[in-house]
Length: 498
Ligand code: G6P
Image 1 (tube, rainbow, N blue to C red):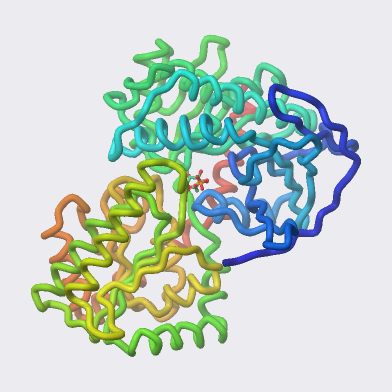
Image 2 (cartoon, rainbow, N blue to C red):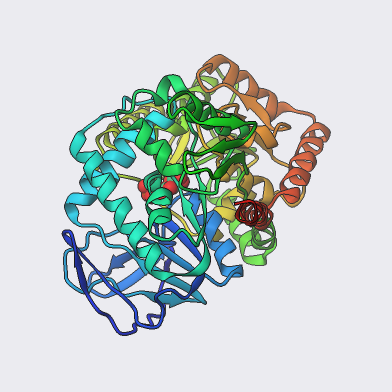
């Protein structure tokens, strides 16, 4: 587990009661940030050691891993939740880390339940991911969503400098753009959705569908991972809000133009290349291979333990190949890393039990002494260890039922410095639009997945190299710095247009 201690620069705190929470105001910072990132999570989570000491560790998920390098290159402030329940007065000290100004927004225990675990992760998350799990609709969850969005918007309004750029992120904060615009019409507001945006047939289920669209329309520029998502949004603003649209432009009632376009997110390619080429990662990759018994072939899955990721069908496809004798224990091993995620949400608990049970059964039925069929790790690892795993893996298996982008697929490609290794990738991951030279699969089709995994493992090395070279070229053309520049340049253009 990567635990980084942050340098805390606590300035004068002036607690202020707002609802059930207390926010902190830092004198000298109010109204001074030219670029403000607003995301549900800060890039670091607060953790307490056994001795009660406060430390910080990197937050989970693709949003943080993509945005952190972007913010390191720019001077700005990042507003977010530090990942713990805050009930105490004055526990919201802003702090800096390596030039990053982090502005914590506190959530109470009840808000974590109703806003984060409830409306965000048991209503919006499954709904936006093709209802792979049934979404739940509760009015008190919506009320908490409005309340927490308001708190983030207030904080952004406080710290943004006159004429600043405020960039709001993801499904947890869709109401912030409009709330912020009402308070601060002088700032340019961008919104980027990191997860899929569903077609009208699914979105229409939300009782508060119009409010959500209007919330997003407070932005000058609304970004999506893929063009299909942007088109879904534009269509809905026409059919549900009754607005005029032209291509990717929406004309709002207050006579503004809002642009809705795809900006596929990426990773810090150079950083991963450097990491993968470092002596310590090379040595660690060799050690991993040895500790797995020097198999001929290592298959790898790395995901947050989430029901959208298609972990079970992937393991089923692999275990059937072992049972049928296509892969032999000792020669082939599947390493599955599942990072703990949203552990108090029921659907995640159900999935954890299913995966535990499935892995246990497969290893009991098919494994040999000291040689499991699936080497399963339920934990999170620092980037260094991830890079070593990517280096060690011959086949990376990424099989989500639906995914906004999937940065693990891109990280694997970045780490294949010798242009070898095969990427098996779901057609339903946003990444498949750019990484079309991967071995594409449909995670609902177990037989298709089996034959593609086999084909990838038996491919002519020349074909493998050709594919990986093409993937690496594509990735280099759009790294995360390019993504941020594209988005922020387009936002500036929209500001001029208004
Ligand atoms: C996805 C979402 C992010 C989220 C991350 C981790 O990448 O797009 O907004 O932060 O998952 O999930 P968590 O619930 O732990 O923040």
